[in-house]
Image 1 (cartoon, helix red, strand yellow):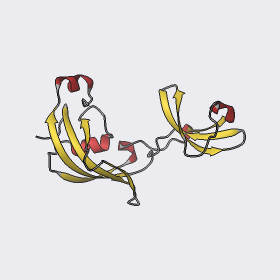
Image 2: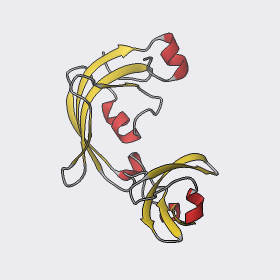
Image 3: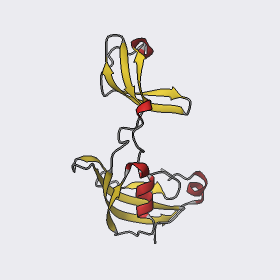
Image 4: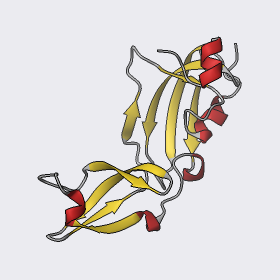
Length: 154
């Protein structure tokens, strides 16, 4: 059975950056299951998996435009320290959920000064070319519930 829209695919993957550093990996006994065609994984990987079958292995290079987007310097902002009221210690690398005009967004603290905190609203992998080593474990038809929601049932 091929991976096509409205099917559920299970994949094992290892994600690396340009230097070969492992950024993420599916647990050996637990492949990633996703509903194909609903945008549940990055577009470049979803396109590469189209038409593949259980047992297929592939290496996929995904450019930023087909992954988490290019970096947007406008998403780097400096906020007053008191915007973090109730947080005892704000440190670089910490992540917070903030409200934006587009809804909730995850921001990462870049620098902390005495009176200001610099944050980055870009996805941590924005601007990076991603390298996937993928093994297709299983492909099945989606249930009616999965088709309605576009999500894999637990």
